[in-house]
View 1 (cartoon, rainbow, N blue to C red):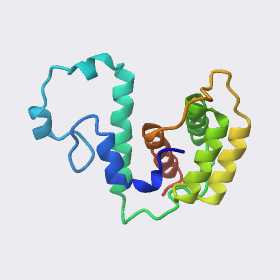
View 2: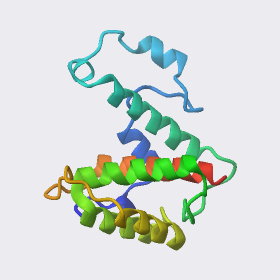
View 3: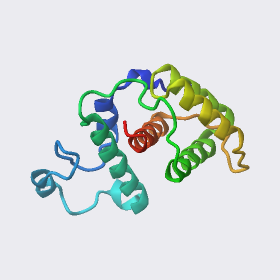
View 4: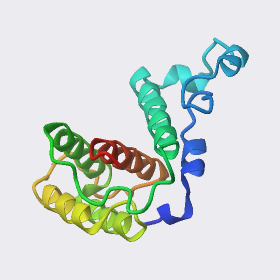
Amino acid sequence: MAIDPRNYDLDELRTASDASPLGDAGWPDDDAAEERDDEPTADESDRPAADAAFEESVTRDLVAMDHRDGPMERPYLPALPASLTAEALIFEWLEFLVLQAGRESVADALAFYESVGWLGADAAEALGAYLAGIDDARANDANRLDADDHRVSLHYVARLASLAGR
């Protein structure tokens, strides 16, 4: 893998994904919102609204993950939560990754996420079992996961950890 998630921390990922000015609580800061131009930039007007909304959601989740009571300990997600909502998120996440870079790259990424403490052994094993059942002809096997893909993965880890009560 070309991008190494061990090299970033939550602040770095939050900065990289900052699609809108956020205050300390993870919600739009009134002062920053006033300073922002209401006219979209060329980049903003070319991007689909769903992409911008997703990036803001990622930013809010990472801020919330960072502001929990006490510091989060690794692994962030020791085991997968048992609920239909969690299962839907798992399939959504794995399908996204498979479409980005193919199943083999995703298996490598999951092993790597376990090695850096994003996933516990139980979570990584369960995700591997889910991954074995996903095969999509639309997968871009020639592609590699990049920093944005890893940021999205951390977002899903945070969401699943919140479902597990962590």
